[in-house]
Image (cartoon, rainbow, N blue to C red; front, top):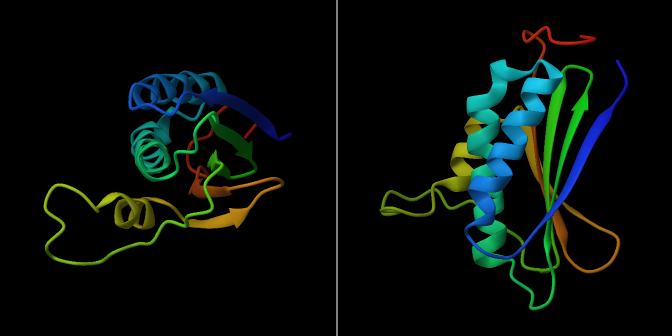
Length: 136
């Protein structure tokens, strides 16, 4: 199976999150990876929401990349902020602060990488081995 990647750019507002989620779900359906749709949708929502809330840089867009690799779906969110996300494990999170712990549970692995130019890439990889799908 060859690597396939979808790259999209988004405004730095909360309306981008549901639209990006719909694009991801359509992409997964086309790739025959609907079996990871629920987890992938939640992971993308959390990473993109973090970028919208904490990674804002005036005049810059946020970029998402969905990559189909052998046995893995990689979701990346690129933003121009140098501020690194931190996973807080605390019992008083209330209605916020649960995003990265959820990503940690759902993804096989995740992390933060530098990117060319300003900013960072927050990424997560979900295993797709049991999905079958086209070309699997």
